[in-house]
Length: 184
Image (cartoon, rainbow, N blue to C red):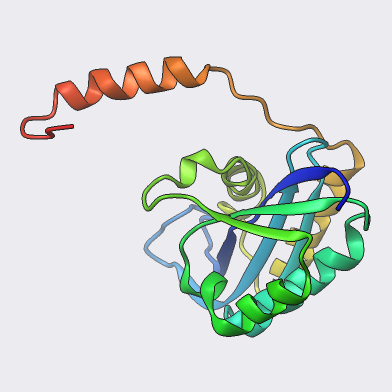
């Protein structure tokens, strides 16, 4: 295979809200439906590849993988960093991956999604576009998500860790020592 690049790919569901106060959670919050976004972040360039679906099953994840396969240059291996969601581990996905050897799946440990850089991108999407939005239809919500991805990709920037691995592990060790009975 060619060179490798790491792609981070969890997925999220977004709810359509309407609220007269436009607050994240208000007394008049009304949910009109949800949509699911599968997204991959190219950690080298910061570019995001997204695929919106009405359902969140292996069939939709497989469609996302096929779309990613057509969009990523053929000479690159694709390393997908995923959460442990069952959709990512079905027989249908295993079969698809077997037929596409340039794709490699890696999974974050449970409760360690913060390790996946695309989670930071999802946080920005949520904070800057979705949280206070009042989308009156799934179409409006999906349009906002697509517009956000397009705007992001006009000038993508990769995320950079601000701490070294040793600094993170030292901080974690200090925290664990303060937890009674942690025993690590």
